[in-house]
Image 1 (cartoon, rainbow, N blue to C red):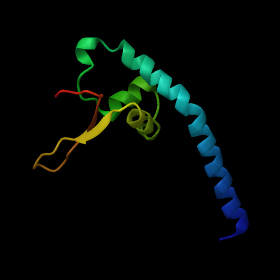
Image 2 (cartoon, one colour):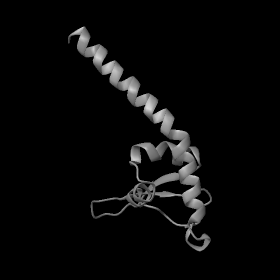
Image 3 (tube, rainbow, N blue to C red):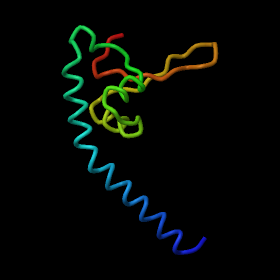
Length: 95
């Protein structure tokens, strides 16, 4: 590989990391604010990543670290029929 290409890749990664670091505090607070608006009666349940992505207008790769940081757990619904969908549960989930 040419050194110019490698430098270009490194600059791209550095720019992406800066963007992710800039978004993280904002996304964390947006998530906290959004979750506070969810009616208490329906908070203690499993959430699909698609639902969370839609609510916050971002991608799961940015949401996952925020969810882990806030104590959420990623689980999988196991079944003998192939697909085993993943879902996220809030801290203290009793389900």
